[in-house]
Amino acid sequence: MSVFTSWPPDVTTEQLDQLTLLATTYALSHSILYLPPVSPEKPPPPAPESAIFAPISLIPTPIPRHLFANALTLQRAYNTLYARVALDTSFLDQIMGPGGVSDVDDFISALWTGWKKLRDKGFPPPLHLGLFRSDYLLHQPTPDEPISLKQVEFNTISSSFGALSQRVAGMHRYLIESTGYFGISPLLSSSNLPSNDTIEGLVNGLAEAHRAYGVPDAYILFVVQPNERNVFDQRMLEYQLFESHGIRVIRQTFAELDTTASLSASRALVITRIPPGLKLAPVEISVVYYRAGYSPADYASSTDYATRVYLEGSRAVQCPSIALQLAGAKKVQEVLMRPGVLERFLTPSEGAQAVRDSWVNMWSLDTGAEEAVRRADELVLKPQREGGGNNIYRERIPLFVGLLPLHERVAWVAMELIRPPRGVGAYLVRQGEGRVRARAVSELGVFGWALFGEGREVREEQVGWLVRTKADDVDEGGVAAGFSVLDSVLLVD
Image: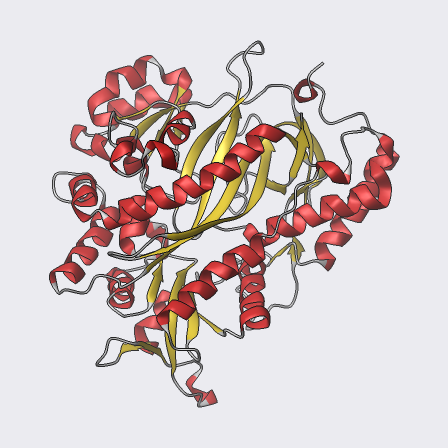
């Protein structure tokens, strides 16, 4: 019997209770945390007063060893691919500019227009930094077919949960070493848990960009959302930057940056630290790291878009640049699938075929709406958005396509559904909701970074991974959006 039809192993209620106690106390002790929800009736206090543990899976998820190794190898090719796409201005203009997505998508239009104005002024970013995450599902259309690995999407902005995922991998290792999972399966062995050093890897990418900027005393700017709940995932990167590299961080929102950011005559980005009553000296910024800006909701007004463009007009390394953010759009993913397009950016020796093999079919809705309606049960429709909760699935597709204006279809892509192995289960634990057993689907994400610029070699690394698990009757994903829990990898043969 396949492990994928009999997972997790049988475990008693008493054993589950003990594992849950150990897992949740480990999570609280090791910063696998969120800040509590806020509401207009109960705004957040000036400083955090409490935290809750992030949603977690009690037992790690089985992933075939050879497919996990393949995902790690693929990341190097994907790092290079998206760096080169971001540098191909004419390619992105054709997709995102006039006659493309920007004609019908205000969010994309605002970003592309700001980027175009900077180029017209002769202010392209001197260096781009990408902290990437490539997301995959296991694919097995029928029980008789071998399991393969298929990409869901490639994230070029605010690729989150690297730090918390490293901690969750540590939690599962602790549970194995402290309890042996009560002998419920010989697979639950430390030798089947791959190492995960995502925090150090992502921080090394930020530190490389900081050093390339060339001002040792400069700070790295984290652009963050107001009332950010996922702050611990970000703070662990901040602390590692200081402890391992002596690099300091300043955190500000777009609204704050509207009044605190300025450019020197040499286009150095300078931030006046707040609150002003502290009388702290302004600081120069080496790297702008966006943990906000991936969604229209992050731009409360045209002022916030203007602030984003203003930051991009500086000499600071952008992570990501607007070009790199646009390169991560679903429409670019669809265009790259077309015959011969990928091969403009990757050679066979750089893994072009392996990248193609990781894709399922996609097409533009403006040229394939009838096929999307006919095959609705097999598809998902995706807009140019990140963060979860944006996609259209199955039975909702025909009505949605029928109501979507013809000229707006260019902003949507149809993607064949990936079919994970059926029968896999998981124990999902959430603060305030207890422990739930569910039939589950798990998504593997692999992290990498790339530092590059015009005429420069692409420096890149694969640096870690995450797993997110959800009930298999939930279409959408995303931990922050409330659909998934954090999990880790159990390698199986």
